[in-house]
Picture: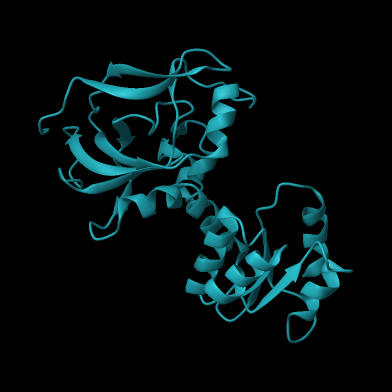
Length: 265
């Protein structure tokens, strides 16, 4: 069943690896039996989208390709087997567009490891179009009172750091150090950690980031890696027993913080 949906739409498309990215008219796809069609209102842009354009990951992309995996919008059509979505529901398109749901990884909530995973904006067309397909079982459910523009980046950056915090095993009241706390992923990690009852030690550099991380995002301590004489020692000293945090979340892009992370806790 569906409501009135156009047959054509505008999309950002790459025809060959390396680009260019073309803004062009393409067909609107029809949802399969277990799929929904989402009228995308907002889409975030992730660095992974650049990898998809350049084709510099070992996993090949589909071609032609519509990129994007942070899409938030409204359900406008659904397949005949879909019973738990209604037209007008708000839905999100994530990196994981669909999986087999039957392998050991899927059965243990490790869907990203599924060998048959469909990747939005990589192996299937993603959110850089007006109407995008998502598997009904994997699309994100968005409350209608939540602004869609605020949700879009949560569908990748937010999920990334939430997954890290969840997998860390840190419990309410325990300390977590967040490396890169003042950046895009790090600032989301600070907010999730606080909401989960964790005590945050932010690691980044600069007075502006220190102010944001401690005053706005609620971190209990801030270590400036650029001015610190010993980052490991300063992070450990930020905990009452001096033994360091119970977990470290790394969203930095260079190697040294990964080496230090094993030393601080």
